[in-house]
Image 1 (tube, one colour):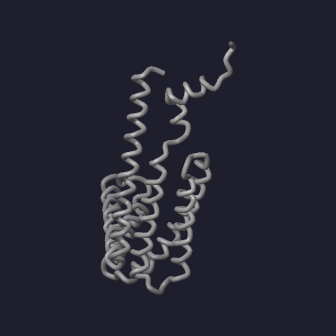
Image 2 (image 1 turned 180 degrees about the vertical axis):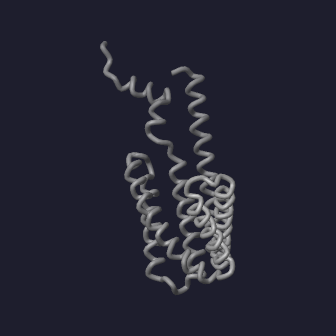
Image 3 (image 1 turned 90 degrees about the vertical axis):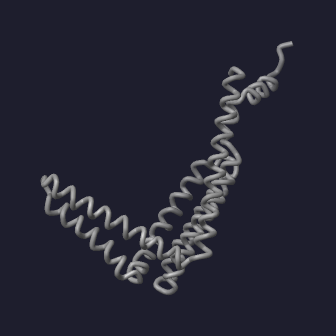
Length: 202
């Protein structure tokens, strides 16, 4: 490998590490803010989901009316259902929070399982245990939602979101500090080192 290619590879690895670190820092700050203001976080999460549902419903209704293709009635009814659900979350925030808490619990359980699978897939990578720990924490938080529901739902939703974001941020920072072993072996230094370990013919 030429010196120019090696330098470019090192710069790419450094850039990836910096990006991963800054993303992790941002997630940590957002997680701390969410934990510090759980009621506000819960309300923001519910409002955001209500906006998404209402917007998606309006889009479906517009599309159904414009196209009038096969399944027009079902598309129209689905759009109306989305809009109605979004409006319900606005009008009855407590009911929406209780429902979203259960949905969040299901999401965290699913995310925790996928994080555990990801951790074992990258197990040879240094600090893969942080991904494993993040998966265990996320899985535990999902189980906590189901056990605590419906008590303390207003603050529990925001707190769990904050803790999950914080845990993810920490794991991303720790993993970004250690490039994968396959990347490091492609550097000239590692090749030279391997060559130096070969027995000499002399």
